[in-house]
Length: 319
Image: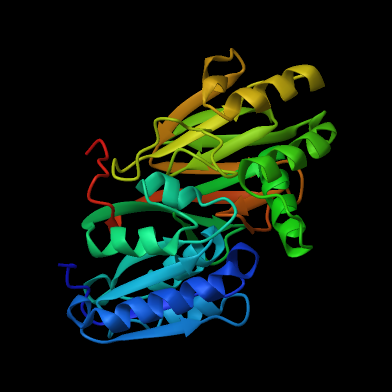
């Protein structure tokens, strides 16, 4: 028997995964309609514009469960919306991942691009309290990230993949990230100069990679911080301490696919709960869960146990 999701809101992006989100939303609607015992009533809301999911999720206090159906972008929007609700009224989150990267689904150990298996995992899943990251740029309003925040080359690559998906590329996942990476690698020859503090410890230099992670991967499975755990109350940081030459940069890029870049002498892996970073340039490439964030000065912190999330019953984090 499925678990009781209570009053349930499905926020679906019909355009996700090259339009396959539409049929996935229809499938979930039919399935929930056929299993009356799984919910105490449900609604399927299909987004029509950017930020639509955030606005709808911010109004979801009457619901017990919100299911985000789509890629990392719609999951990000739903998370931001849910965090606008007071903690005592905030619904729990579940996902049916239908996207190109699906990095948050990888962190949860959830099936992606298979709505039948994904909704079955939700119905048989377990609720866990997961951390989130919070970031503000240039003193502006804070936003949240479920998986990744990065600056520099990797952010430029992530934003390029978003643009290419919007233009209709047939590539997806790590293959899309890799081809964008090779094409943009020459832009990182000088790096980006920064001054940072990580839990009060100062750091400065010129870097091509500055990734702050809640989960292990970005870019469709690149294991940038292999030990990151979204339940440990910390953020994991990967940064390069030097600007490598093109050949070495390409080698590190390849090693990052499986997390082996961490053994390089120019890669520094750290953990912190509070991070500030300021770049010398007025605007540095920056992405938060794949979405563009403008600025040159950033304040970042972990929000421990911020959101209740339904994960597959087989998933075990370190805590």
